[in-house]
Image 1 (spheres, rainbow over the protein chains, first blue to last red):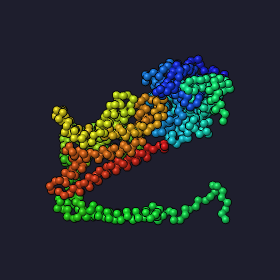
Image 2: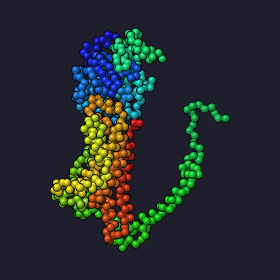
Image 3: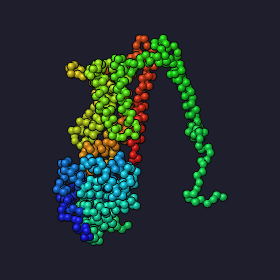
Image 4: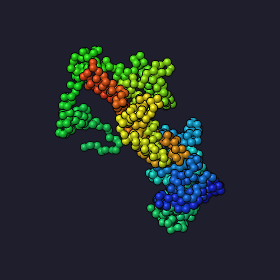
Length: 255
Length: 369
């Protein structure tokens, strides 16, 4: 961990999962998840498919409901209270595997929608903000196009910019590069690395181990709905403790 | 020998002869094989048999000028009949000196709707005009048509009729059924069990009974249960019946659109902190409605034609008026002209709706999928 990263991370815990369980019907998807995330911390979550890693981060902004345990985001506990849920969602941005841009709106309108309707920002100000973030993801020239006219990599960068327009304190990434052609992965990862270097609190579900080594403060390995192992990147990759972690790493790194 | 081909340097050659032009088109599309050739010849024969007599009856042998049936001496259609009855066909028994009120409303609608068809008009102006059309005009026109206030003479609804009545019923049904249908469709997909069951019961009830039953109930049964002075006007009861009936169909069409929206759209809207209603209005419904424009317009067209059923409760729409005119003792025997004219009237409006929906689909296409 570099000096700079240490300085950015504070002691304040912004996400706290305590003894969280989730079931789909009879199927026990998440088993006793305990996780504390500090402000500015960058966490990469990996694991085989069906291990519950996506479900876990989707619980953090309550796209999925947990049935037992506690989820506390910046002092707000997620319960059935719609007010709390909307408050948390305003502060937590999310990027999806399939981008989920709104196809009936232009890129600019995609970005200004939430600032205008959730943050009550004047339209002009929202558009300036949107252009600022489009420049940061390096596609300001696409502002007036529709999502269907952009490549996958461009769409994902727009999706990241759209989340950033809400000025979130925390960003969740749910396999942001899994639906992309190989030559487009780099452009999205570049944006994510920049974001990480600026001190954004990030939780990324991804199989990009290069990205994990480069920016992660902590790598978490999940399997069968449990957190099996967590460590800083160096020991995690070089000296995994658990058998299942070793097997998983050997499968994804050795080809 | 041909020169060596270098990619990208080949000159454009004209297409081979006999592949373009009218002769080639006819050969490819009409005479591409023995079966197609026979079909083409057969269709030409059919046209030859049908079209000339039709044109003769409709135009060449028809009587156009006159005031009574004695002026119809030719073999073709007697359009004098339509001409003489035109006022009733258009306005029913609405008093002649008050017809300007109806015409005024037509002119207002056309003038307000016209700017909506031009791209140069800013969308804010268009929104305001649409608001006037959908919210202000229904209220204004109510007072304009009924009268009894603002110095206008009172015209009771049994005197309304003809195309005017058709439009009143159809437009009320259309304007009311879309928002009602949206609410019902959202309600049916709600996770709240009470809301959901209420919507399901409502939709299934209205879809399960014929429109004739609805109209008959509204006009005959309703007064039996409700005291006369509390019971609203017959036309109002019919309008409410038609609106509820078509909103049930509309709800199912819109629900189809809602189901076609990927789950990711709902999640993305929710993840940004949009509330349920905001995400529906801003994200889900614009996409869902766009997707089911053909189904919505289909329902509109069906509704427009179903208005003819009000004949059963003694209201005379365009078709009813044409039938009534043909049973007038002075004009017996001109039923066909009446039906042809009514059919023409209905076709004009339904075809216009169909064309408008295609235009709308093209205008809203954002290149997705």
